[in-house]
Image (cartoon, rainbow, N blue to C red; front, side, top):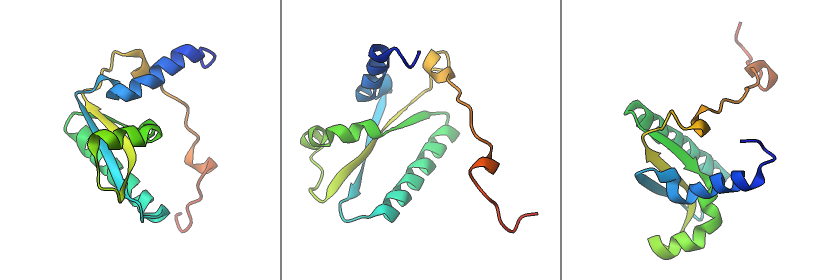
Length: 120
């Protein structure tokens, strides 16, 4: 969909809140005392979970969009008050025929954003 088609993009964004029709939706919480380092750890943990799901033939989508509605989610889930919503994750079988799943963006080569020292 073209970037200029704002209404269509917003409709697609709103699908976050149905977990993109996935059969499983997961919420991930983090302790409020955790800092940036632990948020990084949590991101790596989520990546590992998502890779394990892929290994089992499942697709997943981490959804930062859920954090906008953290109060509404907390009303329903009722987590302990020392936890805050980090993200949602949609889990299901990828529909490879759906046009949105065909989007491939260009990636910069590693030489443009990284320097590897000590490697020949």
